[in-house]
Image 1: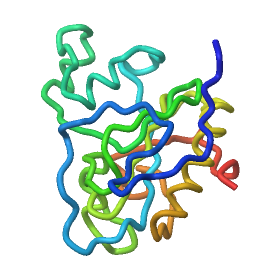
Image 2 (image 1 turned 60 degrees about the vertical axis):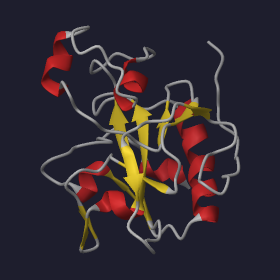
Image 3 (image 1 turned 90 degrees about the vertical axis):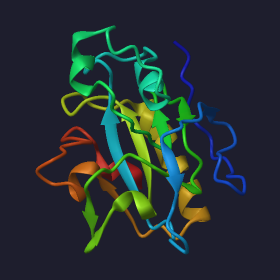
Image 4 (image 1 turned 45 degrees about the vertical axis):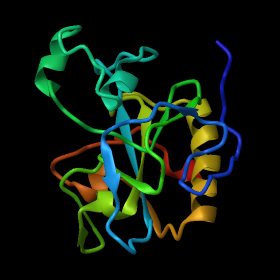
Length: 182
């Protein structure tokens, strides 16, 4: 398999990343007026859990998942969620929502005393699970993506989903190596 490591790119005026594969999601809306993007939230996802390299995550974020294709999907039937970016195991970066819009990734959440983290954050999903180490290619794509986002927005922090929704979420999990973010 050829590694598709992401190289630093630029964001257009709407927050679409040059070089990312785009699959626009309907699961987004406007951010509140005059809301700065100050947070990046790191998640993990695989569908079904522990299965990599399929298109189920893309289908979930674009409302095209066949709910009857796997028994696990019955528990998430009808879920309408999204993220800004998804980084595959081989480092490929896929974008679903432009950064200028609010993706539906954080749910009930709080950071630094502020609730509704979707309002002021960018979501990045890594293909994986809490129980699986992430790949070198994923870190090789995540680091320049974070650099690009920090150049474009007043990012104050990069946190895990578990940090903004403790007790409710556990991702990106204990195998995420925060020291690799530089």
